[in-house]
View (cartoon, rainbow, N blue to C red):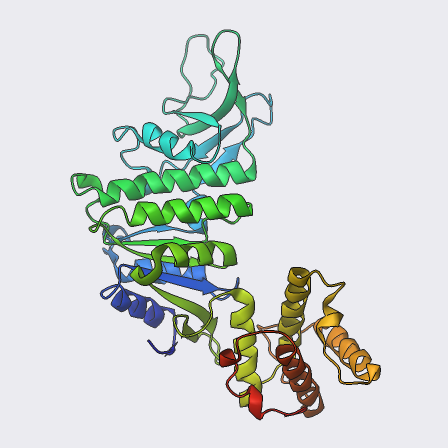
Length: 388
């Protein structure tokens, strides 16, 4: 595998489809803001046929992203504050056949892995009517969550936490993926690809590990079934998936290219995919090329903070190695403080002044040389002296 540059999102999506002809899984790590959600839409659009009326007549991708989560909205019963329910968007095909396929049973089995939360889906909701005995207008199906029951046996409705809500929606999606993997289910035979983007935005680390492990088990439970792309900004989630899927998956670090709207796929089979290591390799490459921008100080400081936390040091400043004069450390810490607190954005990069480039290279070289990183990650480090 080699690093690949792509001119736009459609080209990137097309490239991923090509990779899925060789491997069943593709894993992408990318920072927030790079365009993972837009990429999932571009990937979906390549397999969608739309008629003159704007209706989708053919598709091949089942996807999970921020738009999927938006299909679920809370009705908080602001008038009575008694029955808060999670409404389902009845206009979406995502919920087609929900009742007939007995999804509640399937979702409940998956949900039990993560929480003791109970639920039921009300398909026959109606507005309250002023007329005695009259039925009001139909309302969208809605999910009622509960843990306890009233004395008469009725569930006592509660509002789920954000994490519990996300887990429920995730289990809802997994139940559909299971159907798509079953060749006997006619309703989901159209699914050739599954694209999953950041399913764990509000989960703690324990659930992040559980979700990644469970997803890997589900996806590898059958040799057949759809091809899968998973993109995420969550380091732990990405690492667990990489370890679980191993040589069954292609792994990439997705970055924005130098020109706006372009993208680079870094092959993480030959480069590290841990976030802090990938950042250091990136910084090593850009300083060697001379393309140093002010936001690179932010990136370097963040890695130093992570290193200090891991080693139990007092703060990141102790990661700056000096020779014999303390004024060096004072100079470099002040410079990093100044440059990392300025209004320097990766979306509007500003090139460093030559003097600052010299200081950056010196700090970087001393930081890397002063800690037991694998020297193979930084092939040009041995050539560098201070200020080179």
